[in-house]
Length: 517
Image (cartoon, rainbow, N blue to C red; front, side, top):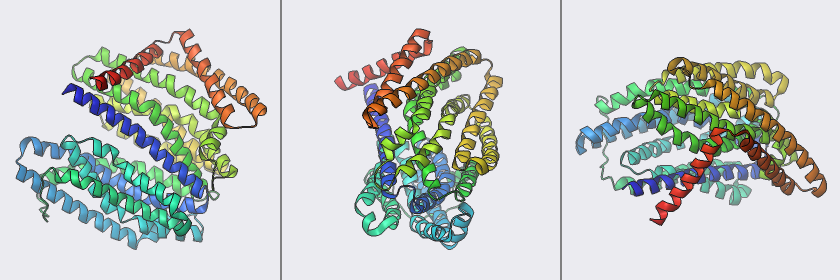
């Protein structure tokens, strides 16, 4: 059984990483097809308006549905669980239908709120695209509830892989149908992709042998419990979405292509952070939770310190590297099709400021999980609200002077300040977890990374002058930077680097061992 669980965990990890890569490839195709044109701005805005609703309501529904259904499976009969599912599915579908109809009726007003500074032409296109995408909200309810239902029955593979169908359809639409149907074909593909997600889930949900019927019993206990649990989550998510709305309102007043450039920059930034930090955070979060539950405070603090230091070792050099090579990297990944050199420079400009916040975003995730491990969700929620206020104020002050860069810099500042405040709050909550050591490691890594960045920049200029080619100088410069950085870390005898090597060796060894057995 343990071997089966381990292999399943490995498969899920691989699917998750592959899904990130595939999603990023979708964004690369989008950039090549529409670049940073007003059409890309309109599509991204329309998709984002719908995502605000799904982020606030549907994600909260999925989060609260899982624990309540788990209780039903453990303590209620099959018939009671079936009734609970029917009520939740029916009520949720009706609510999503009402939201969809209201969205259709008030699309113009929604777009005016989200993008008040769009020109009449771009605003009209955004309205049309939003109306095409809006019905996918209803389908997303089914996707979310089906995923939660499958997870409660131990099926994690389908929920993990469910993003692939939509990405495949979006990529197919951009390659084969945009010449004939333009940006409208891509909007239709969003709806069709969500529909295919539901269709793929059906064979697996049917195996669970639940029987659907119309049931709108608003007094059903599970539904009422979800109603109580969902309110604070919606409030917390709503605060985050206010921040997003303000960002997009400001971006809509910037030059054409700014929203698209901001989107590509954010996607690239998030992709790198996800690849570097996701596995480390997941591995250590479980250990931290176990240590705290067992009353092992010393081990909990030590694990927390090591996790923070390992992320510093990974993220700081990556952020410096991206800062120095931002334009060559953007050109390598995106420069093709409709994504021209002007679009590359605009995206690189946004990335210039985004790299400053990479360490803040990464550490905030770890510190937030530390609070979750000690069963304190209130502090993280309050801190998130403070970070939103800082972001909004900073953006309002910086955008008039830096344009798109001011918008991104505001986000980076809020991530850094919010992380510092979280670390201070955690120190007050659990005591000293080694902040002096963390500060020392941060200083060492920052100095080494800055020197590495200077060397990488110098190497790229030399290699580029010699070859007049972007790919070879970029790869050689990264290689030189990595060799220098690793050599300096070994020379400085940083404890966490040895631990990081050990984790990688052990994990790889386990993979081969499990599959061999």
